[in-house]
Length: 98
Image (tube, helix red, strand yellow):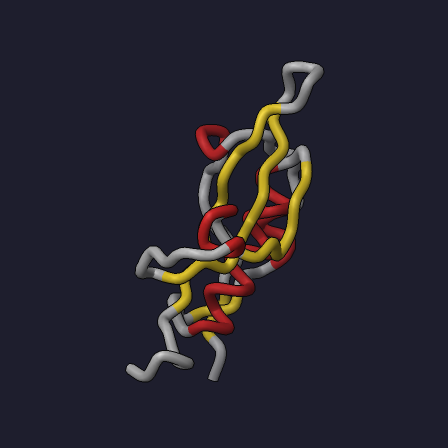
């Protein structure tokens, strides 16, 4: 790979709020650590929110775009308001893109 062409991945992190709740943030980040503001802050934000499933849907769409998953996420699989990954039951209606 050249200096301009680094591999990206998608991560979801939680950040605490002052009221004791969590906010979830999905980010693009390089697979290899690097110096600089974007590297230090963890990445570039794709989505953020109080509900994990809403952020996870956008993160999975980004993973599909990067080629990290073979199927496009189905929005209705992410329809319930789920606040933590532990509540997640998995995809139900995922379809294969041809």
